[in-house]
Length: 124
Image 1 (cartoon, rainbow, N blue to C red):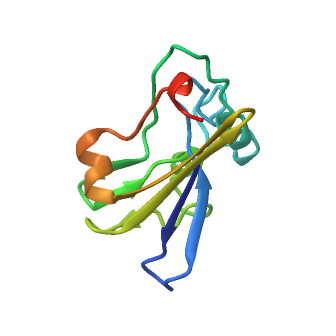
Image 2 (image 1 turned 90 degrees about the vertical axis):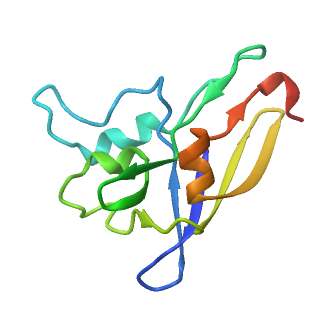
């Protein structure tokens, strides 16, 4: 699932892939972030009849943040522009075999609702 939002720094659109709950975190056995493990969090096989919840935005003490595999990089080197405001428009896009879905949300709505519910058997 791709996440798109306007940067607070320069207004250009940022794009990242969501980190699925079922996917491993991109950290090694010592707990250190490894950027080469991030792509393992992108792909998720969707099974008809199962509902998926994908964390996209969460509220931290600094406000709302986009959550993705790069969030685990505490240095901010790979995901420095993850902070968003309440009404920041965020577009989510999921695609795959027989799947094409896109919907827009605000950061607050995503944080309050826990994110979209994907039900592959209902998406065409």
